[in-house]
Length: 389
Image (tube, rainbow, N blue to C red; front, top):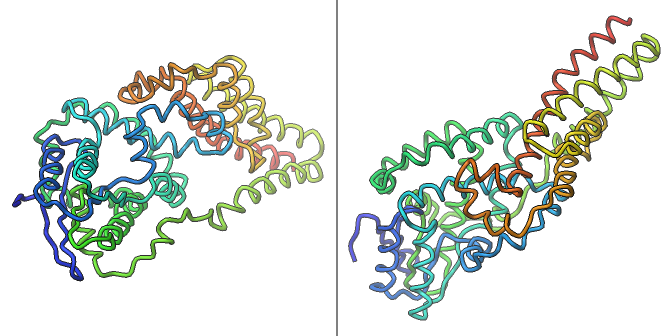
């Protein structure tokens, strides 16, 4: 079967048939199904991991999520990032009247109907997102979240013709290059590492004839990585926080405490008290404002304000977590919120209406405004210190 989005390769005695798709393209879904039916390969590889495959097979998966556990385990940022990505894809898919990932669904279904083995060739989505998150600096994270949220407003302008043009190699490569120039840490993790992972998984699948259904943007990377040594264990591991990540929080906390103590001995108790009160007032006001903007429960606003002065100098506590846990207790998400989550992430209004996504946004926003409060409080505290001396 000949098609511009099919790439045939011979590698170490195997025949690899790479089917390049757009994840929200109806034509791609039909192509994936047709190629498997005509080629009758030994194995079908799909660009899915176990978690994404189960999410497709079990649409009620979101109902099993424990949002309180997510907040306690400090996974809100990764989950929010994942939902924002899913939201953008869902909006395009709805405009084109096709289910997100339908080409993968139909590829798996066709393979199963023909008795062909299926290989989930992609890296676990949680590992990919955690690796991306760990590699991003603070300011990159601050920059990415608003861009992802803003993207929700612009998906409506994408046409079916534009999605199909994404499968043209030169256009897609240019888009990836632009994306990589803006956020190289994200490109390396979301695209380059997965190219290597997919290439190894596809080329090492059992069987002499292998059909791989992957996003068109991955095909050049898969071809480029064929024959290269790929450390799958390294690519599948979540890197621990670096030395800066492990000790920066404790170092910052120690510096602030030392500053307060120095203020007492150097400038006297009155100056030290002004320093502590200024720090408390500014951080509490910013944290409370963040919770207020998110229309949180009054007790959540109070909890955010009261916890901010302490949480900002304690590296194991974040004001956003306190606010999130308080809000989750006072306004616990109901079964309806889990049932409607898949639909609600498709719009900005739904994102703020659903209690689950509102909780995630609350945690992120309160942490952001509290950080802004710290940046404002430091020069104020230093001013008191120097004035007192």
